[in-house]
Image 1 (cartoon, one colour):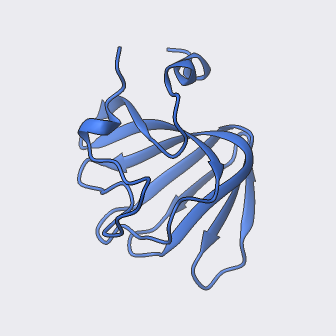
Image 2 (tube, rainbow, N blue to C red; image 1 turned 30 degrees about the horizontal axis):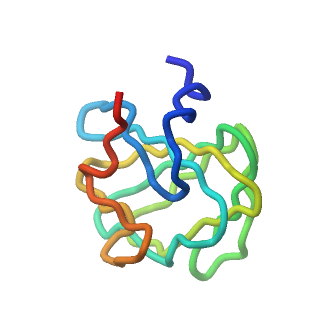
Length: 121
């Protein structure tokens, strides 16, 4: 599977799409552009972010914001409030437990349920 080619099937920003499963986790791809991701956390699950292309501004509560670039990886520990944004389009891979809600308990205009995260093939 060529990850970069999978992004051709992702048309909306902030809309993760499941491309695979490993045990009890989903492997997802998403495009980020703008700042619509609300502050949120995942009460019981860690979340892995890997930058495939572009730059992502990462904010975690109580820490200085930092920029992730292509090839960077960061794991947000469970319970840590965070949000991401990007000025230009950024392509990311996420690895999350199947129990993780897209935006935690926070509901916003970008929140997607698991059915909405299925990549049409």
